[in-house]
Amino acid sequence: MRIDIVTCQPDLLLSPFAHSIVRRAQDKGLAEIHLHDLRKYAINKHGQIDDYVFGGGAGMVLRVEPIAACFDELLAQRSYDAVIYMTPDGETLRQPLVNRLSLAGNLLVLCGHYKGVDERIRTAYITHEISVGDYVLSGGELGAAILVDAVVRLLPGVLGNEESALSDSFQDNLLAPPVYTRPAEWRGQEVPEILLSGNTPLIDVWRHDQALERTRQRRPDLLQE
Image (cartoon, rainbow, N blue to C red; front, side):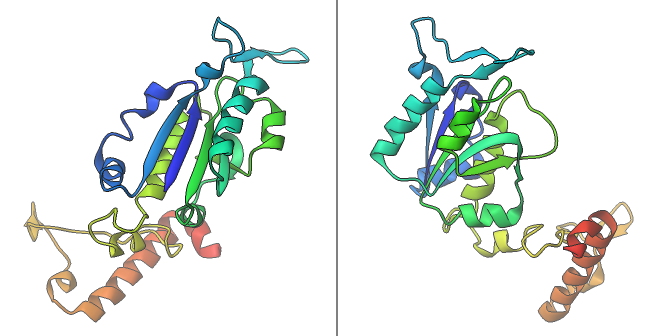
C-alpha cells in the first residue's frame, strides 16, 4: 500500500510513522508513506497557502491553488483508490471503514488546517471525508496519523499474528473481552479459572460472553446496530 499525505505541517507526522507497527510495515516493504508539504506549492514567494473567508468571519481557509497543484501532480503519477479529506464533518472513522480502506492499493489523504479547505477542492477531488470524532483538532494531521495506523496494521504480514487484528474491539461489533497474563494471582486478584483450563472451546465461549456483556454495559449502541 502507498499512502500520500498532503499537509502544511509535515513535521507533525514524522514521529507517529517512525515507530512501532507503522514503522515495521514500512521496513518490511508492506507500506509506503509519503508526506507532501503544501507550502512547496504556495501561490507566491511568501509561502502563502491560505486566505481570508469570503463573506467575512474569523479564521483563514486553505486556498484552492496549492492543493490543486499538489493533487494534480500526484494524480498524474498514479491513480488512487480513495482521495480522503480529514474533517470534523466527515463520516466517523469506524472499523468497517478501516477494513475497506485496508484493501486499497493507493490512498491520498488531505489534512485540513485553519478553518478548513476551500469547498471547491472537496467538490473536485475528494472521494471520502473522514472524521476521527465529534471534536475539533488544530489540523487534520493527528487524524491522518490515526487513520494510517488503523489501516496499516491490518495489512497482511504487518502483525506477528494475523489473527490478532480479527479479535480486536469492533471487528464483530463487540468490544474485546478482558485479557490477562502472568502472574495468575496479583494482590488477591486471580485470573478466571477457565482461562487456565486449556479447554479452548469453553474459553472461546467465555470470551464471547464477556465481550457481549462488556459491550452491553459500555456501548449498548453497538448491539442495537
